[in-house]
Image (tube, rainbow, N blue to C red; front, side, top):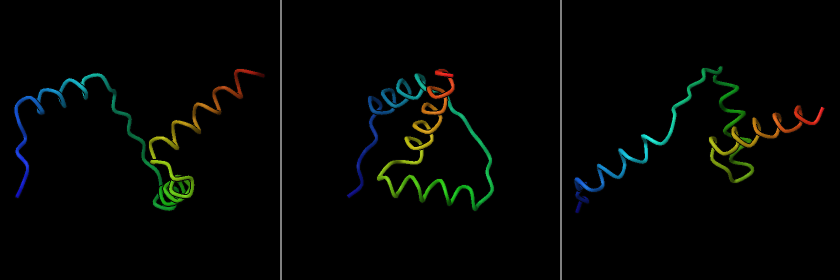
Length: 64
């Protein structure tokens, strides 16, 4: 039995998505695989892994 997507759920999703920005990058397939593998190795989502790496780099450079 499939679940029913209610109007309230639709509005909640719309509200949540409106609080976010979408970023897109293009990488070679082997780079994508490498990033996915490293994220998986750490039990992280790809999004979390990329954000962690970028934020760590920003913090390191701010200390210079």
